[in-house]
Every structure is written in structure tokens, then in C-alpha cells.
Image: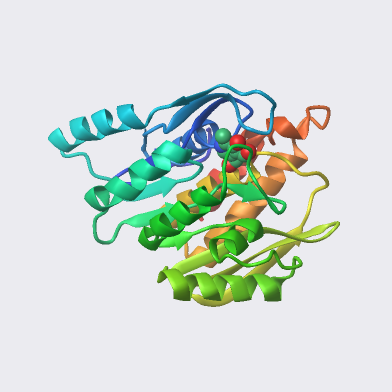
Length: 282
Ligand code: PXL
């Protein structure tokens, strides 16, 4: 990228999520975004799907057995990471991570868990209440948790509140307390037809961000947000600033997408990358 200097972030980041072959979610967006930002990603794919579950009749190949073999090899070569980023996992891989996360985490590591499992009041197809229960066990290990409002309410076993910054703050506070997570950010809160926001309870304090909302709802925006957010955190931006950068990045990706494509295919993250890289260097 001419004119933009990209530093390499020492230590690298482990991305562990599904690989949905078509549809621009999870690994398909986390890897290019974090890679472009110099985060030296290593991937541990949890499952291969023909598409994300927003399409009908997707195939699904669980990779949790292979994940164990891959991790055993990594242990032999002393591979370590500055950050771990877990997103959509799938049922078996959620069990894998509950069993193995302790082995891989180190002090001072960023453990970003985006508990991708639900949106708009509903679980993603194929996931059930058992998945929520197990996710509650995993999130104890997060240093940063980035649920949307549906996921936050499901994790707390509460009814989904109306979309407001105040209600989201209450959920964030409860997540911090119940699960002893130092930083909780509730993402993608649609406040009106043209406003969207985030709230955070983080080491910087309590804060909220409101931004212009582009029309439409798109698969993959949560994953693009979390990936850009993590890149900014690894660049040393504080969590509130990282959140503002990620929100703007997703907006640019939506503005530039071919509106003729269905929402199922996700925004054009490539369009936001030059801006993201220059913003990280500021
Ligand atoms: O984070 C979105 C996502 C990721 N992976 C799979 C999904 C979805 C959303 O539906 O189905 C497999």
C-alpha cells in the first residue's frame, strides 16, 4: 500500500474461528484484515462450512480432532501468541476451547472473545441453549468480550432489552461482574434508522460511541469490526479509540459495497483497509 507504513506487531495473533467458504464471515475476513495490519496471524480453523449458516443447507465439517493435532505440534515448536481471538467456533470446537484454553493463555496476553452465536434476538441456525451454557464457561477467560446485544442478554439469561445505550450499559456492567471480565464492549447497537452505537466498560472507564448507520444489515460486520478493533488494540490504541476506529472501518466497507449483492455476502472490507492502515499509524 503505497504511502502507508505498516509495522509488524511482535508476537502474532492466533485466530480461531470457522472457515465459511463462501459468504465473507469469520476466518475469511479476520485473516486478511489482521494480516494486512501486520498482526502476523496464525489460524486454527474450527470447522469448514460451504457457506455461513445464513444460507440454507450448508455443509459442515468439524475440525476439532485436527485442532488437537495442530496444537500438539505447536507445543513442540514453542509457538506463542501476543493475542488470541476466538469468534464463531461451532459446537465441538467450543468444547475443545473450554478444555484447552488454559494451556495456551499467558500473562499479559490479549484474549479477545467475540461470542458469535446470535443476532437480532435469535441464535444462529444449528446453535442452541446448550451452546450458550458452554459459552458462559469459556468467557471467564476473556480479557476483552465483544458481544452484540442479543448475545449479551443470552449470556446473562435475560430477556433482550430494547436497543438503547443505557440498557446496553447495564448488560455490560453485569457481564463484567458476573464473569470477572476486565473489558466488555457491546457492539452494533442499532439506535434508530440512521444511528448505531457501542458501549464499553473497560480500563478507560464507561463510555459510548454513536455513529451514522448505513442502510441495511449485513453478515460479517461483527467479524470485520472485531478484527479491525483487535488490530487497533495491538497497535497500542486504547479500547475506546480502537472501537471508534473499528466502527468507522465497517462503515467504509458498507458504503463501498456493491449494493446489488445480497446482504448475505457481506460488505467490502477491502475498501476500508487504506483508511484503517493510515489511522493505525497516527
Ligand atoms: O460471525 C458470523 C458467522 C460466522 N460463522 C458462521 C455463521 C455466522 C453467522 O451466521 O453462520 C458459520
